[in-house]
Image (cartoon, rainbow, N blue to C red; front, side, top):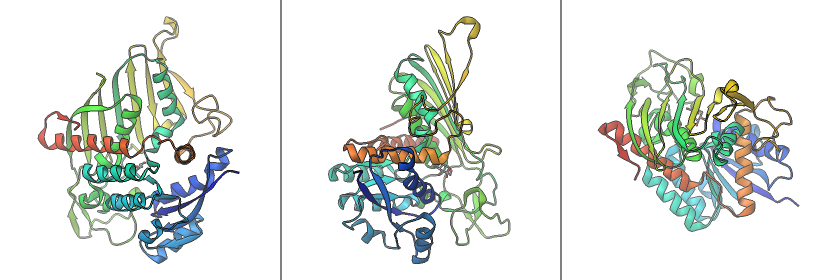
Length: 388
Ligand code: SOE
């Protein structure tokens, strides 16, 4: 019989919605499932918010006290979907209580927090994962397969972007994402780390960076209660404003440990770009291009194609590709954000069932944090900074 495992999810916002959907759907896609996640307890800031999340996301119980929940003997997995400022505290408590952990990205606000979380998780011998979901897009996993098979040869160059526009309006509220004490950093931590994770996954560890960071909107209207609604937030030109103390944009060059070079750009202020994660990788024998806004597709070019047929071709991911057996039976039916979270959930429970750490785990999350730290340092110094 497939084991049922009880999940305590801390945080019932946007990420809580995505994770709750994945818990419900994963066994519907990946059957037999490695384990069946049971939505046991959801925790939010107040009893009222927790109860609303319980009803909406299908959990048995609601609580506003994460400390007592993570210690419950009937909880197997703790899922951290909170803003970044409490990731470390919750993860360390959950590890000490012997729970497996999935933590939303970025792993932490600082390298120190990420290191403490990683040490606690390793000492506890639990399974740990950081939720960089985009590497679970089948087209990205297919790119990884081609690279591992040597189909594009030795990698020479990686170009990664993550462009959004939800914070371009200067009257968007000063949510936690614009406050260093809660978020740790701005665009670098929020979405730049997704690109770093993809670069690490596809190319290898980044060794050195040089970056420009920029804050365009230096004050924002103070948020009047309520939750972070990103681009759907109410805009108010008349409200009292307070300073933004994080970066809006990062533009950088990268040196990888294996000799490849590359670039990374991330911003949440690029009008017209929505979830524009693009990757272009050139190797000695071919190239790969991916755009998340067209996430069913991988563009590939192999140098040994006949001369009269050279050029990028479009591969639509489906059953023949990574995770294809569990997802939809015909290419092009549509991979969405939910599918990336369902695959992430499958990989988490497969790791728990096998006792083998998944990737990215907290150690990978710490490496990503080290790159984020180097990007921010370089943004200050204007110099190449090593990833320590
Ligand atoms: C906002 O930039 C955000 O919600 C990120 O925090 C997520 O990681 C990304 O997947 C979507 O955009």
